Amino acid sequence: MFGADRLEALLESVGAASPDDVLLHVEKAVEQFRGSRELFDDLTLMAVKVG
Image (cartoon, rainbow, N blue to C red; front, side):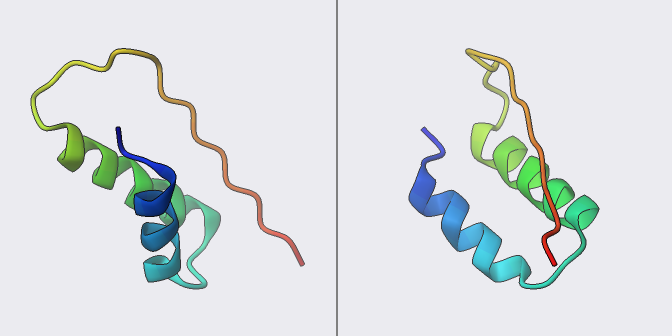
């Protein structure tokens, strides 16, 4: 499982990136983590800029 800890570390590493850039980073990280394995479920991503 990709996991909340891995996602939190990734989000901290992208800093104040735009929502589009955050989504790209997360998508690439998940693809890299998954490798050639098929997804067992769908993947839905959403980023919201506050402030």
